[in-house]
Image 1 (cartoon, rainbow, N blue to C red):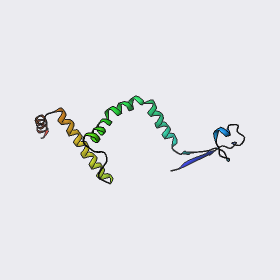
Image 2: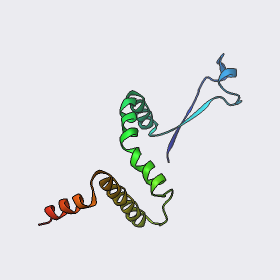
Image 3: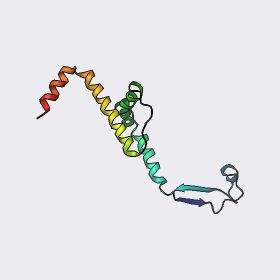
Amino acid sequence: MKYRKYKCIDCNSCKYKKDCTTSSSGRTIQRWVHEDVLETVYNETLNNNEVYKQRRCIVEHPFGTIKRSLGYSFFHRRRQENVDAEAASMFIAYNFKRLLSMFSTEELVTKFEGSVM
């Protein structure tokens, strides 16, 4: 990661030096070169707080249900492709559980038979 360092050129004669820094060589600020991107994301998050509240209600519910009801609190597999497969199977189980709460088994069988060509 690349950083930029900023150093005050007139720190020793500044009347706020005691409040600003305890360093004898003066105040130095280090910022990541892409810090402005983080600031933009932070400001957008604050400005769109209602969107994030709605997202929390809609999207995060399945994750909580999977963790609590289906008993998944961590991934058992390692490596990205294995974790992806495990996550996909968890979400298939979640979606199937939701289907069973909305329809009876007979209704689901009828719907699936009707959709198969």
